[in-house]
Image (tube, rainbow, N blue to C red):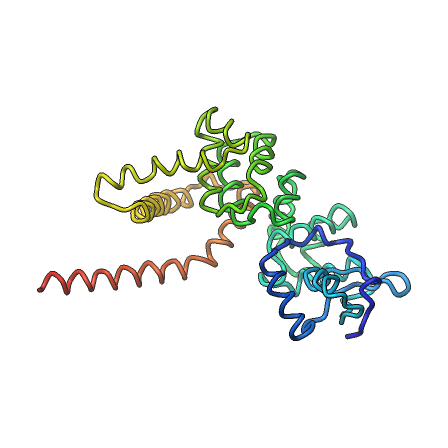
Length: 309
């Protein structure tokens, strides 16, 4: 580890890393109180210049705090080997799937590494590499900039917009228009999901209202319709939403069990997309099962106790 002047550090790959204003705010306070605890990860450039690969939040905080020197560690002497090292050592905490995808795409398109080359040097499968290349290839410049700037939530893109629009063959220009219409508005992922269904399936009236920026009006209209069914059964708005989501979970679990057993699932494109989605699901399934079981057993026990009174 060495000390480097912040003016000698290049931010060439800053757009490859996701921004998070909230995390950066807490990090700023931490650095103010304790200093920079983890060194920035760089690659040696010409002379005393360094190219930053990991630590952009720390660097931006350093500028805000008028720090002159920051601790750095060199990952290698060339960009290719350093990027490969960063990806190999990455975890979900310091490099997300989208960020991995940007760097893999850079290795492939800017440095000419083949899928087999990248897979071999990362010691991973070619499918892993192809999935990440596919993510970037299907992402427009508008969507990419909205995601990496932090103006559009990654979760909303990966688990709502990307899946919904691919299944329904939505034109890229409509996706771009929707993303521009809702980005940077501080909306929750649930509200973005509502607006996506309204924009792509709610008819021209809702679509026009979203494009004109009337998001609150659109959300109010859509919320009015949601609790109507639940009210008929004496359920609150919150209770109705959970019941509806449980019904959907049960429905799609059954469909998936049948669908995954079919013999027609043979294309490489399908496997690449399915493996990416399964990777995300496998990380959630144990927690989901535990929460469902805990809720069920607790409420079932309460119901049994009440029935014996």
